[in-house]
Length: 108
Image: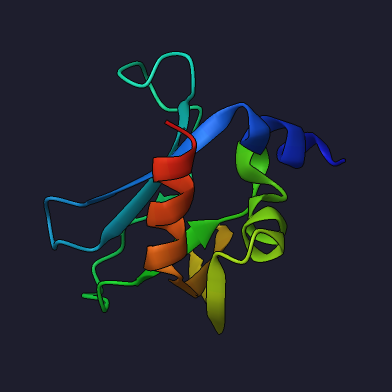
């Protein structure tokens, strides 16, 4: 099991929306403290307006390996490509929102 897989096991995915443009926001909350700060902020907001089930994922620094874990869990239905933002690369993906919801409900 990778370090990111272990980290993922400690958390619970939660979705919301960025205030600036209503794009999908995905974070990983601590299962033992759902009201505390997130373990990871998985998505990054850009100035693009995206469909409700798409988001840019950061897979670098503290998030390195999270994209692979999301794919292994069946939460990524499609990868659209990459976008450079400064010195980093973001990955545009389509999330399986129904599966995210069922995982969230099952882990409560």
